[in-house]
Length: 300
Image (cartoon, rainbow, N blue to C red):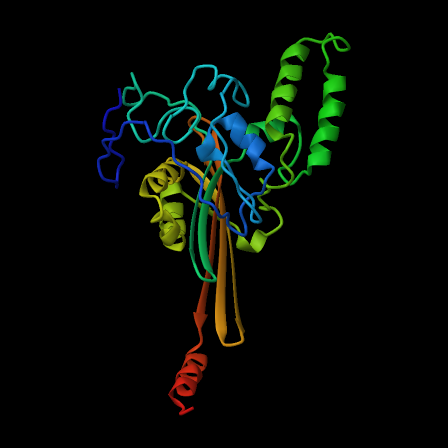
């Protein structure tokens, strides 16, 4: 049974995990693309699907047989409301005592708000950091690079060809990492090293304050999913953050775009998520609006 679970700074939630959240029909311009659908199937659930910008589709919830890195899915620790792997953050885990270490959490969710040309989206995606390490690859790797590295490592560490101690375990680690990343084609890239002038390090609470203001419209589309996203960020012990801003004026329209990306890690249990907020707000310049008003007032 589900019991109310109170998070600091949030209202008490009395939720039974019976409703699985869906995915908005439209994806953000900056959201990871179709390659993450395979990741969604691994981490479990329709709520975890990441649709592409051009077109998105919903899928039925797949049976979760094994999670990347093993363990979580084998233990059946999937929240039926959110599709989260590890535990259900919106309710108190069964048998959990204060101070107990929670298992690694994996969440994939997307919220989108649109009003004409204006658009706001929030996405949370498992970054698969341990899988990148297992394949000895950066998260910017292409699908072809991932496949080539897997072939190279699987030959080197295949138990039939390598009898050194630990080879079997290393081969299994490589195979599981490839299963998690084989359809990813750069979507999980976090270009931290490429932008030293934009680098910021924050706590999870600080990221909530910063990203929350940018994505408030999208969060309002589904408050329950927004609470789930907030939990993922709030629990992070450290977040590396990159924020990009641009502003243009064309044909009397001012377009301001903000892209905020954060790689948030909870070092207590190994949870790591890529958090992406995209904000595009289009407004009419005062001069253009005044000219339109004058045009409407002119006699025909």
